[in-house]
Length: 87
Image (tube, rainbow, N blue to C red; front, side, top):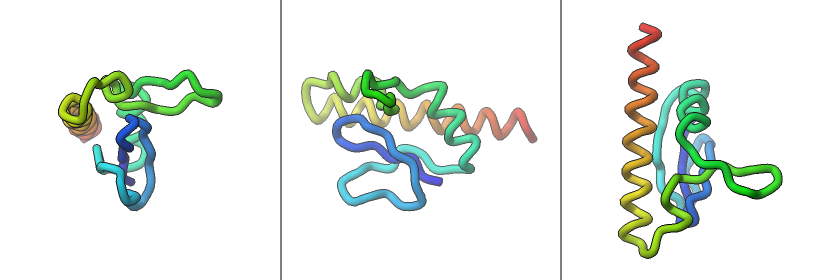
């Protein structure tokens, strides 16, 4: 599965990355959702959505991209750590 994020910080998960979204992680569904649930921020919507921390409040595109890269790196590290613990 692939986790992706929109410019707004909204996170989605699917088999393909939609046009206009950026891939933030890829991996087995269970590990991906575990990492997302631990690291993503919840929106105030009903029902709540997952958001990339730092993106909704970013002042400019450079800050937004920086927050996405940082989050993507944290997701991958968490998923790799989970893989090592189960091996």
